[in-house]
Amino acid sequence: MKKLIVLTGAGISAESGISTFRDAGGLWEQYRIEDVATPQAWQRDPELVLRFYNQRRQQLYTVEPNPGHTALVELEQAFDVHVITQNVDDLHERAGSRQVLHLHGELRKVRSEGHPDLVYEHTGDVQLGDCCDRGYQLRPHIVWFGEEVPMLLPAAQLASEAAVFLIIGTSLQVYPAAGLMAYAPQHIPYYYVDPAPQLNWELQQMPNLTVLAEPASTGVPKLVRELLKQLD
Image (cartoon, rainbow, N blue to C red):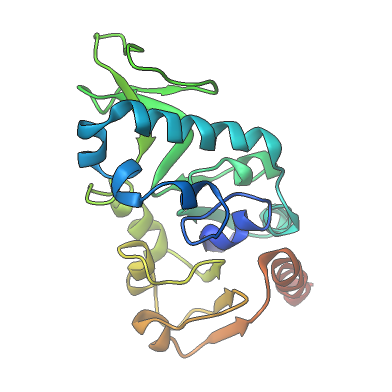
């Protein structure tokens, strides 16, 4: 099977009702990024940080995958599909995608403050005093601004093996994720689905680019039908 790589961003989750930090009226509007999404914020006020991510985790119970998520699962009939997502929700998994790499961490996981390799599945709230097996405070399993992205190298490796590359619901302005196309072969077909597409430098170099200026919930099902039709 050909390897099909999908890079997804906040746009695909926003259609399910997940707040993004660019939204007005969502969870992020109540907080500054500097107060809840940096290592310095964690050191300064861990209780506030935990409360914020507890709220975001609780929000997951109120939303469902949308047609953009579910359409990607259909591609697994014909391709070796790997989803690389910048999102920290679990909507791809709940839709049925079997191979999902989270670049920026996962809301339903926590990790040890003292031993980052100790990662636990977690669906409830996290409080100060909740500790790992070695006695260190648990923190959100999230890559904050200013932290290294541990899954970048595996993502770059996947990109380098792509036979088809899909980019969905991302502004392509946040690096290093936006630069993953630089690792992929230039000659392969690229598809970019976003209601307000912005071609970054990497995409401008791709000779076989198709742009669908639509939301993921409508554009991805159309694209999936076309890709499967090409194989008939």
